[in-house]
Image (cartoon, rainbow, N blue to C red; front, top):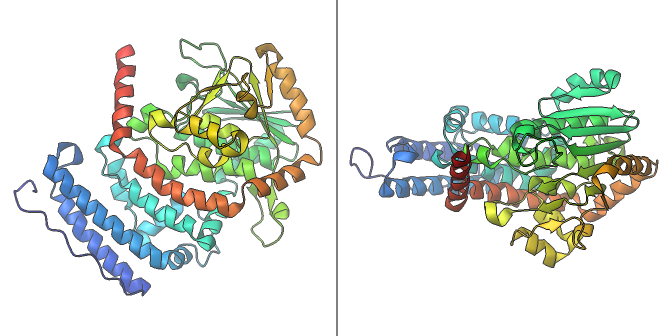
Amino acid sequence: MTTTGAPVREAAAPVLSGVLDDDARELAGYVAAGEETLAGLPPKAARDGPQRQAADRIHAACRAARHAFLARHVDAVYDLLTDGRTRYPRLPALVRAAAERFPGLVPSAAQMDAERRHVQAEKEGREIDQGIFCAAVLRSATAGRHLIDAMLMPTPRALGLLADFRRTGVAELDTVLVERRGHAAEVTFRNAHCLNAEDTGLIADLETAVDLALLDDQVRVGVLRGGEVDHPRYRGRRVFSAGINLKDLRNGAIPLLEFLLGRELGYLNKMCRGLLVDVAAGPWSDRTVAKPWIGAVDSFAIGGGMQLLLVLDRVIAERDAYVSLPAAEEGIVPGLGNLRLTRLTGARLARQVVLGGRSIPVASAEGRLICDEVVEPQDMPDAIDRAVRELGAPAVAANRRMLVLAEEPLDVFREYLAEFAYAQVRRAYSDDVLAKVERRWQRSGARR
């Protein structure tokens, strides 16, 4: 029932003809009718049981219509949004353009602005509609590969900072410090207030840092390390990463486009495959700049921090550190961990980590499958220097490129991400995840 007591009316599913413009009008009209009905309901947090069920039915029907439309037209839609794949918009710009060109296909700017005013549990879940679009684009071999290329290009922010970085060898970002030392670019996480957990600011800064390291001709090797943190238990100690900031997830500040997909298609994929600097057809080695990466793990690498280790060429960890992917506890998908972990650990251990939440001490036999070298804390600087010298050898870049090609072919990456785009965003709005992050948030408030 609506607030006035009138029954909720649900329109018949649109009939698609296969003609793009006609089907776009059908979809727009169908979604507009659904939005009109939703507008007659109270905000999500104030809905009673029948009202929640009615809203769920409307969203499900509109999403089924979007799936059907994209199954027929995703390549044509993508070509229109990119001028026949001659332009390379990044993912957020692509989705904004889709909202303007095809009303109802993805949420409008106004709808997303309204969503951002709510905590995660009180949103309509419009990012799920963005996820449907992103998954369809990535599922297409032509559109998906083009989007991956677009996300491998240097960011405008990095290009603006490049001249100063080349001159000074230093870039101080809000949550990351980049320093060139010899032939290494040392990238230090400085999200100290939250154990170097990942938030939208850190993800953006890391992509800028990776771009700078790959664009600077004086840099041969990249090094990632966590800086000192403020947490009482670890104050004054370095921490690699606590993974996704679950408080931000609870508060609705972990966006699909900029964070959940942006990190996978952005800095992580750039570290893995290289930075795309030339879109002209030709050998991948001529089109990209790729360099080896080293990770120095202090204290722990949890969640996204452990995922990051899976794309590195050398991982050095202090003896008492541990790694984990607490997906079972958090209820979300651990990025590309499900794709990449098995080839390091084997299937059985990967399932124990991903499905059971098993934590692995780096000094254990299992930890040696993930970390190349385990050292005492005081020996970490020398170990890093030694790894930089070894990985800075001329033949390393070419060989690591061939390893990536063999281990993770582009279409395997693309097809995984197509499923991840939809699965992850649905998990982010599922009842069990929302309940878990709320309980954790309540516990953290009680400790203050």
